[in-house]
Image (tube, rainbow, N blue to C red):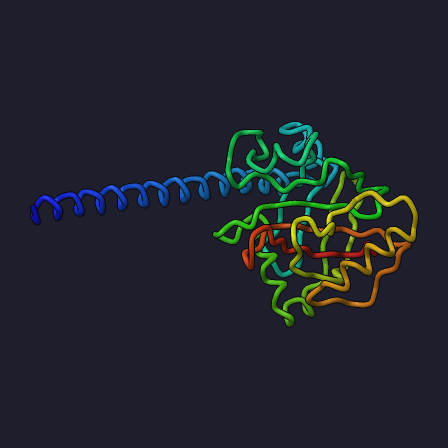
Length: 231
């Protein structure tokens, strides 16, 4: 009886090890696939003569392409797409193939040129890709020394200065994009600043801002959000 019990226990352990090993293998495979996809897109951008040509080349691969984003002090260096909802690109890559890492994408409700708050989403990947390095801004010194987000479109480069970051609940409303009046936007700014970890007094209700959003792991449905004002 004891031998049978040991055999069953050994079998269970082997099954658990095999399942764990398979999960690790598939995770690493997905990481590699995402790295390959986005490395190729960076090559496409760098091989272009200018951003106008890069935009044409990137748009020929995916017509949902909107612009390119860089965040100072991080490896955030990605094309940004915009879908018809905020679900598709959560688990589809730039080529619209299924991939858990997904894409960096602009909120489907947004117009970057006109909206008071444009929101960009990306996964917090465990290998520090996509928006994984937003985690760095939880360090106060890093927040103080890394301020600039750059957006490159077809023929314009926009510079944003980071004015706040914090950890928010998913339903806190930090990603609100609809404001009827200037007062609504001012109330929104006061709300996010009131719950921010760090902030700079450089934004007003007349400004346009950019919000970067990713998951955080302090509690269920936690989000890291970084807010930057257009210069």
